[in-house]
Image (tube, rainbow, N blue to C red):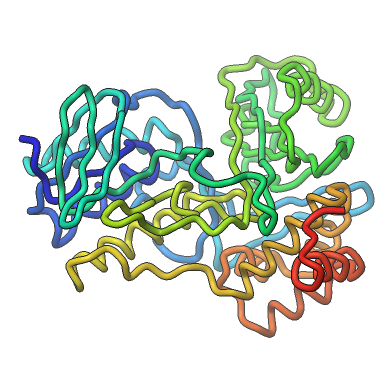
Length: 386
């Protein structure tokens, strides 16, 4: 049937999370269509996040950690968390969980193919796929299109979080499965900030990821070279098997993504749910889809969705400005922030749930000069780069 209450364009994290939220609550009797290029069945990615609250996907968390490690040149510390947990969900488990639940709801349909058009009308919105137009009250668009914003707009910063990771298996125990390494800066700082990130799933199995915050991606061979150099010369690992790989790039921008265009509602990264200064998106997407579902139930329209508070947007812009001007300054900034603050204060700050007093403590703990220059650039002279 071509007519639905709600159409979800894109069956990735944001689209499936919204369908999952709708199908379990008061909206379960609405006709919902999910449109995607193909059904996702492979373990093509992992999502990690930290939280002190339960989530709707806790049952499929692959691993969680209460200890977070930070490593710099002259500072190394493992922090024990009391309230927060750092969690990882595998893509294959997420897809299986959502599809199994949606398959039990006769009001949810799927169509697979290339979406060629999404249009907002006066009282409806439509999606065209496989030369067939489907109409609904609203379309929720999670298809991230870089051309939907202007990467050279003078008032915004645009950079990338780009990464490649190996899932490695070692013949003998090589990792502490109780400790997730959030930052290991023992690598060359190029034109940006570069570090390693380690999720130990077992003593002999871990995701080891080389990550950069910079304006441009590296040549593909350079990611492999950095990973192999780190494993051999920093971790002293030469005997291992690569069981899987991850590669990708996430936009880091303070561009104000539109929340909607008429009856087309932007969700996920397309809706600005990637944290500008970190690239983390999964937990923010869950907050967004919960708010959208709640708004539909309470008001009949999906517009009552909170956005980041102005002071947190300002903090993101300042950090992005530093990345634009001199990305190597990020390493000492993060080192001092982690050395001078409890880990859970930092996580609340990055989750935008910290108190004003905690914000001041974070600000007072980092080198002032890069931020003073960024403050001048962003809010006084409006010059985003040198």
